Amino acid sequence: MIAADGLTRSFAGRVVVDDVSFTVGAGEVVGFLGPNGAGKTTTLRMLLGLLRPSSGRAQVTRPVGHLPESYRGYDALSVEDQLRFWCRAHDLDPGDAIPPALAAVGLEDLARRPLRRLSKGQHQRVGLAQAVLGGPPSLVLDEPTIGLDPTQLVDARRLIRDAADRGTAVLLSTHLLAEAAAVCDRIVVIVGGRVVAEEVPGSSQELEDRFLRLVGEGGRS
Amino acid sequence: MIRAIAGKDLRTLWTSPLPYVVGAVFQAALGLLMVDQLAARDQAVVQPLFPLAGFLLLLVVPIVTMRTFAEESRSGTLDQLLAVPLRVGGLVLAKWLAAWLTVLVLTAPAAVFVALTSLWGDPDRGPVIAGFLGLAVLAALATAIGVLASTCTESQPIAAMAALFASIVGWFAHVGDPAVGDAGLLAALSLSERLRLFAGGAVDTGDLTFFVAGTAAALVLAASVVELRRLR
Image (cartoon, rainbow over all chains, first blue to last red):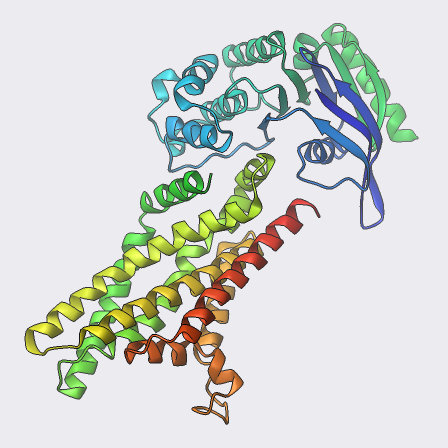
């Protein structure tokens, strides 16, 4: 479970996240949408324990798989060694955890290649594999499909859906409304640090219309 | 976890050209300075090795330590590490351990000078062992200072310069102390004065405590800086 309960955060007296509350249950994919500067990343950092809330509470069932917005691994390590390191960090058996994670992102053939020799899309897939290592009960993904080609995009959506079907609570922050419409059970829209909508996504076109309206209204308020 | 992070750091360091280049430059500079010292003294003695190696170490260590936290912070991997429920103290200790081991490996070939000196003379074993122990604890403290500097910035050059500045100030702390030789405060803090006693063959628990306590204090400070960054 991932839960934000009245999360608020100020920087130098300026409130950037204001009383944000939502819950992501087991087996659910919730899209976290908002324009740039809306407070998405700050909220995610509070949920992950990387930033102390000014008030409110974050509750996340651990271990939590995390893919940051600009994923960077250790360039000198091979894909396999990178995943082996994170297995040790999470106290997982690499023999059990690595093969399914590599298979899920289609990187079995590149397991021994150093990260510095991977393309941007391949790099992003390593980040996804790292996030789903060991099937964590919670997943926080920040723009997970950046740099992926259309085939890889479909595979990534399937990976996210499969994780949820296995009981993982998935919080997906994205700018791609089509992606949110395709994979999310619910969406939470944040504008100006406040949650302005929490609803089912509907079709891609419907979501786009509603999102633009919400962002417009939020921006004026 | 400490083993995993230290192993990862060692692997990352040693698959880059950095330790090989730094090690080669360190040994070449040490060799030239030692030959100069031996020629000037016209004696096969090892004592000049330790202050020379100690001072050169202070120049080398910041290059090894500058990336420990600054690079992880800049690339965002530090956030990934901190998202894992691990103890920040363990993280700092692991990174210091990897850097210290690297510095020790870079220093080890200095033993060649002892072997060479033994061909023409008969150096006492005690001062040699004490001298290398002194270099090891000096490296431990300098590495801890370097790790601390690296926690304070995302810029590797700034981390290196800050660590270098702090170490050099420590090395020359006794200069200008009116009470040099009479246990003045600045002389007591001087890294070179402490190392000089080791090189003389005297392993004093006070000197050992100074280096160990200094190392521990720098690491505790480094852990506090990382913790503050996590929960700022």
